[in-house]
Figure 1 (cartoon, rainbow, N blue to C red):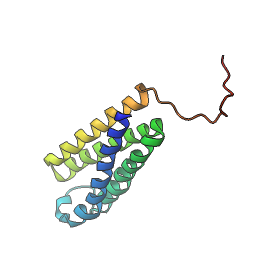
Figure 2 (figure 1 turned 180 degrees about the vertical axis):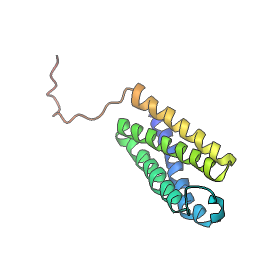
Figure 3 (figure 1 turned 60 degrees about the horizontal axis):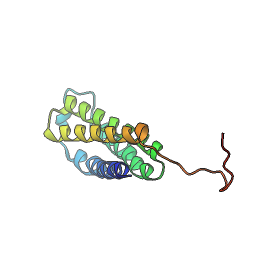
Figure 4 (figure 1 turned 60 degrees about the vertical axis):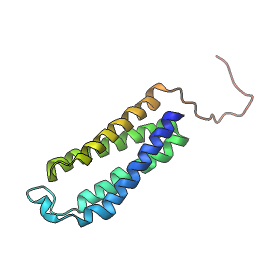
Length: 136
């Protein structure tokens, strides 16, 4: 349970900061930062950060508490999303220490999510009526 709470907190942080980045930070950046890149403007990076990264992190935040295996899988997806986003950002606009911090955050989320998904004993509520358990 502690691991799932840690995933929820970290993915919640990722969701909030990615959404703020997509809505507030990216639109204020000068477009000359993209000179020579494949992006004509910041629309695609903002959508990627806001929809893909923040969206998957938000879903993971909720899902890991109620459906542990599903939530862990979505958390691993959100981790891959932020790592890929930051690597593309480094190649496109250059290096900043914050990008490394978010790559590390993604790797931590992935490791914790893998632990929940593959190692922890996770019991999901059964739909069988109480008292009708069949033994093999």
